[in-house]
Image (cartoon, rainbow over all chains, first blue to last red; front, side):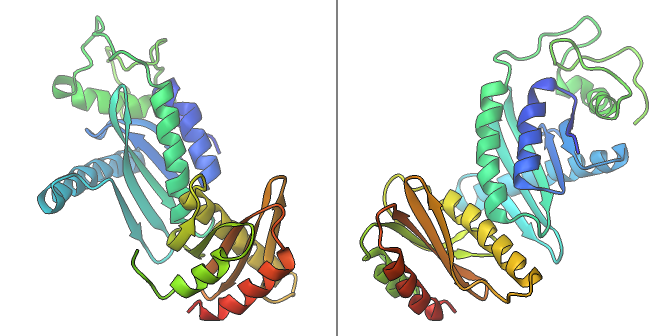
Length: 178
Length: 116
């Protein structure tokens, strides 16, 4: 199975993580909930829901860590009956990214943590050094264009739009529905 | 250094000649329960990969109708990894190439009974 991405620089690291850690699902997103890449999902709606929940869980866990420990929790693991969930942040030149991974008997928490470490290094090395420049159609400013950016990322992921040649997000004039 | 229920097992194994480290690992989670390893041995990585290897070996052995795995040895160019488990816990030993395997095997198998 191939990882699908809205920004090309995350493809190789995410694919390697998914293959090596043998996860069932993986999502790479910005803390705002904007998806950058996914592995294992077949429906845009599922990605959208998972991104929203992952972003909410991440920010909640970070705040809970600050309240309890004075520093954000680094990662979160939930062991379900059949599937387990792992959420953690990776720091890149483009800012922090959130990884959500679901795995079953084929993998383990230790393997997911191990390959997450490699994913962090690979993302840090692959991340474009500069933040995306404002485009003619719209600025990459999540405050103003968050909803359109979320829709556009999903559209790229599911083949309904193309990423910019530089691999940065831009806002098209018409956005296909998610 | 604090002592745990596995301190005796780990001490007995790390005392053997050529041993670079010993870990008690959860087979299901692949994470370190207790360990004593020399600098340069990535305990978290060894735990995750050795647990996965041991689990696959156990499933393979069971699928072949050979019952459970009693002892697993992996020989590499510069050393070896030995493992034996009980229930969900696996004792993993990282040793130099010249370490006496027969002796290590005996000690590991004797120690495994204390993995509860």
